[in-house]
Image (cartoon, rainbow, N blue to C red; front, side, top):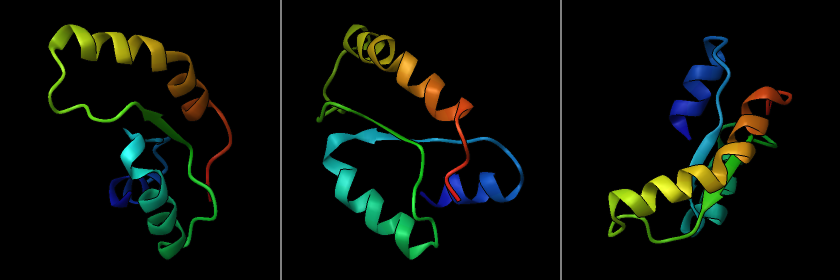
Length: 76
């Protein structure tokens, strides 16, 4: 979340990507950093044990949502 805030502060369009394990934590962190809403995309948890092929499939499944997150309004 800190990376998102740093990029947005520099005028770089950003979105937060994480696994579903971090939905609540990311909302709390965004609020603590002064962001009521952050464009975010969550993929199924866990991800650390997935194969390259499984990760590629997750990326493909999330592609449209990621694109929408970075082309929509900023989360400030």
